[in-house]
Length: 336
Image 1 (cartoon, rainbow, N blue to C red):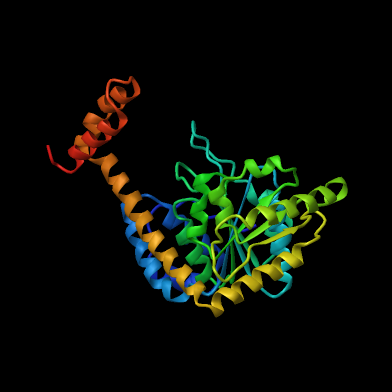
Image 2: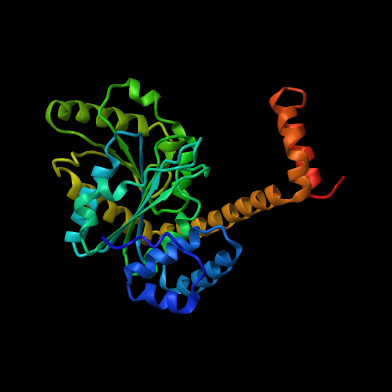
């Protein structure tokens, strides 16, 4: 298994690194992703230059976002799907977001172990990244890593998110198709899925539809088809599909991929794919603005001086959180 290249001291020259990425050099791709994940100022400048070099060579892949609650079998499904897609002649990159500890900040980063057969295939590239403190179930630099993988020649990009929650909708802002994985269950399960998540789904798959759960999965799928009729669809040109599959048995995987291809064709034909890509770029820009502003605010000397007192006042109930935030912003914007 090739080294990940996570240790990066001095930034590389962007031009030769970009050329190596375009040649499909896996080590160069790993170093490039490490570079864009770095928070060092000198690395950031080189990363921006690298992205400018590679942008014209990106955008030619199918971008899939896959979400589901822990234990639903996301990694097993992605491995089965990835192997099937490779057998169809594609190259697959999987960007997996590994949960970070809210206390230590550490992450397991064990996705290559969980996708053992897929990770051994030459046409596959798996890159785990810690989620850190970023909401939305995707790492902050996942968008940039996606573009790098496209420039390296991978024509199917799969983004696996941490789990299901309101913040998970961020994955829909960077992918063309949002796939929601669920476990077979009764009507009560409908109450456990956020409405916003359901409205963003382009394909709902009930995994683990084998053995004693096969009939239950079919009933659950029927209930969801009925429920989806009551929700506003994400696309005017696409009716959300609800299917069953068994990733561990390899059943329903080919059919799921056929749905992905149909979705891509429908959106491309009606111009919606281009609209989604434009929306992805806008969302990426504003996400960068937000992240950069917060990072700059935290590093401001005056903010760092008053922050402990304001945090304590808010935590102890002596000052409303909104008022504390306003004072913090006033300090940052030099209005006081």
